[in-house]
Length: 549
Image 1 (spheres, rainbow, N blue to C red):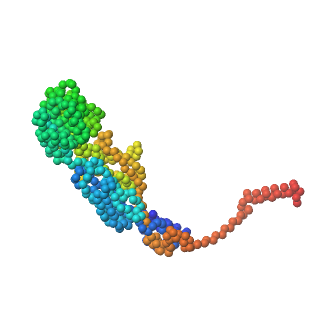
Image 2: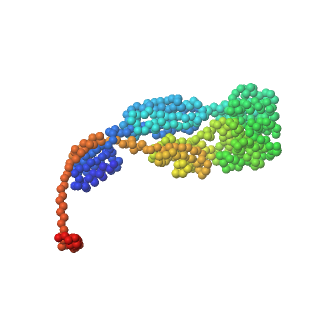
Image 3: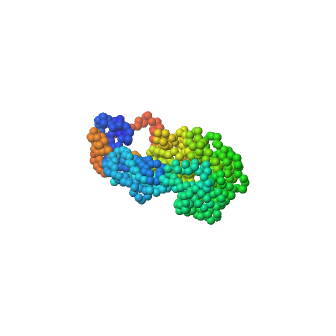
């Protein structure tokens, strides 16, 4: 509404009007307040107010900032930003739930008028896996939108401790390196069983059978073929306890050492002889892609994975896998097919100054234990429902192994199968996370995909919804003060909408009389004279024909 422009138009046409009637809510959305212009108008302006005296009120959860991956028994912070519009002067309850369980609640007092306030919760997750939480804020009387009073978010909760068993058939150079790396991992509780003779382990192998382990590592074991009964019991333990397994081949193992146990790992042992001299190798289907000269390693066996999920992460020049991982059902397995793999422990990656061996083992154990959050959605929107035109914020943790700060993540927005637009998300070094923003499009449901660099395979998919905007509605109310000012200064009257019929009693009738006179001069209109003469001749002719006088 532009009241200032309206007052100027009234001034121009005032001489033709007896008065003016304005129907409005009195909210100036553009222009100026016409105080001086009203004094120049000498006709009454009557105003009719539309709407309610009080502003529409609304409280909403604007965004939630929370990590995507946390550890069990470690506290994490949830920061919710709340916004209130209208005249809000009540104490409201803000709560956080995990399913139906209340985790925390606090009272806050909001100020309204578009103000924002932060609310923080801190707690320890009790369950592992993908957990859904919800922040809720109590509603107000006559609130225009209660859908935005709650917002849910997902967090992947990982175990803080994993039990790992290292079973060594005969100590070798790999043993001390693997044990050192595993002990240095604060999230691993290691139990090391060393074979002393055909029937004895230290400590007692009974502890191995009675304890549930998330990961079992066979180091240079078995040396001699295991009995069918032993393999059956071992397989039953692995399946029932949902353990992951790793095989690190050793110098004491022979071609028949793995007889029977390869079925548990989902591999086939080929009859062809393995190479005896060190071979060059390279990473394959892996995100470890450093440009470096890799030291040659000895290939112990000729192996091949079975099943659709078998994957060679590193291969020898012979074509046989050096690093093989597989998954059969829920059992994940990894094989390192080089008895001298320990030599990589002393090999530094010049680009990142990281230890190559540690990088490989961390990646492998993280995948086996499902402790790396590899399936987690690293990026999240600040909420999943927006109003049209509202700013959407996206943040993400740093999940990429070979990362550099100049690498970009591309966000693409889709409406059905149609691509709407794309947006580049950059890495903020100070906050140590990816950050981006864009405005919500028109009302509807949308899909998004995230791509790393020029890669055509998305690293994450998701959905969000845009609803009809309530932002302007929050500023709609009846501004009686301005409407009364307009009427009082022009000697008019102000009416509420319900009293609009009384308006006719205030309208001043202004009568204007006009007289019109038309005359024709025959001598100036030859056609008219000719027409009259023609009519007279016709009449005379008719009379004479019928004998009329």
